[in-house]
Image (cartoon, rainbow, N blue to C red; front, side, top):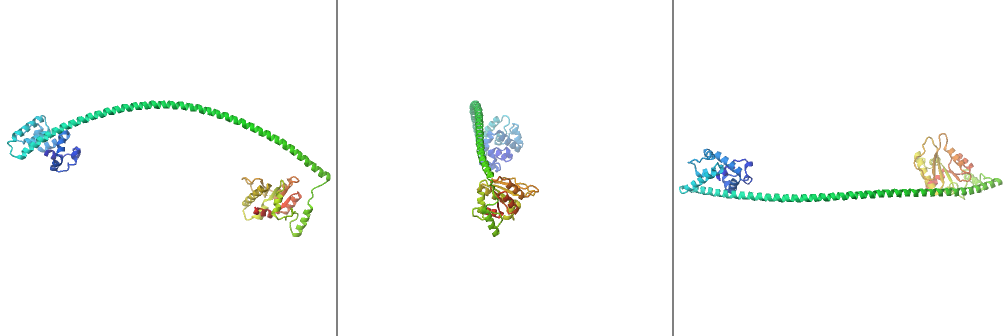
Length: 421
């Protein structure tokens, strides 16, 4: 034990068994006190550890170690020390040598007077017996572990076989599921094909119905056109008859009505504009007069654009002036239902490309032609009997419109009407 405890401190850490590494840094006496049983057990069961300890002790013992390694037993050597070396080095025939040494030690026990030596021999004998017992126990333990390992291996193989059978069954089920899915996909494809055919049939039927509906609408329009043509012929016959009566009776439309002449004289006396007739007792500068004119059937309102904008909001840019006037005329046309035409001097300005309000028309005079000329052409183009209202403060425009049978409203009046809206 003392040999093994001394040699343990000289072994590298990686060559010391795990249970003894913690005590390797202790002194030899402390190793014996704290780990005697572990050292004895490892010497009996771990051949590599015992051989490394034996080599170190044989080298440290010098000639005695060499002699024991060679299988020779010096006669003068201490039999206890030789027995310990023999157990650790284990030369050839070490069992017989160790038995002989033990017999010699037992024979000398009566002669040995020193109690310490007898105790050491007895302790060595006990250690030897303990080592043998532990060796047999370790062998039995290893055999039991081997049997347990074989049993676990057999269980593992059985489990593997079960898992293999389960995997095969799962694969079979998966194949069946794939076959069923393939069948279902085929059924769905057939149903989709039938559905597509039904959709095409319904679309064809819808197309037939739409064609029939268009034909019915076309027939209705044709019948309506015939009815309208008949109505137009009736109205045209009445109109031609009335004109024939006018020609036969030599009745022409007067330039002014008696009330207009009186109103003109009154306006001249009060400094008003010439030829601005009063309507139903209203003044020519009253916005309500414009409302009454626009309430006439099929009235056409013609606006001198820049003449109105320069009167009402000359501080704005030309583009914003046009936009404000067009927007206001859209509101007025929506309320009165009158057709509205706004005329601007062209001067190279492109016509607006955006959407215009309903019933509102915007014209730009071509190069070399003034807006006044376009307005007079519009007034002359209207048929006799249609109410034409021109908004302009230009005297020449007003006189030309009146000669054509139209009404003239000043720009200031329209501006007041726009502000009231």
